[in-house]
Length: 110
Image (tube, rainbow, N blue to C red; front, side, top):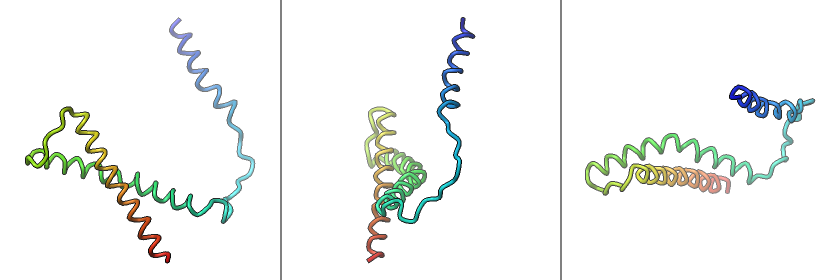
């Protein structure tokens, strides 16, 4: 019975992908003005935000731990709350990096 259920689940997961997928007949490159300018700016900001999170999360964790050990800030009630605080600080720093890049780009363009 168990093998039948596992086999049925595998078939249900793999079968739709073969039925839905259509082969790409010809490659069509993007046109020069296919997307508006704001989508390029949004995509750049998104890449900067998530790319800088790789750097800001460990830096925030180290700084938060040092500040907590030196008594500058009080510790969080739970470990989960400490992770949420560190994540919020890292997200704020990454947002600041993205906004700063946007402002610099707009000033240089003028």
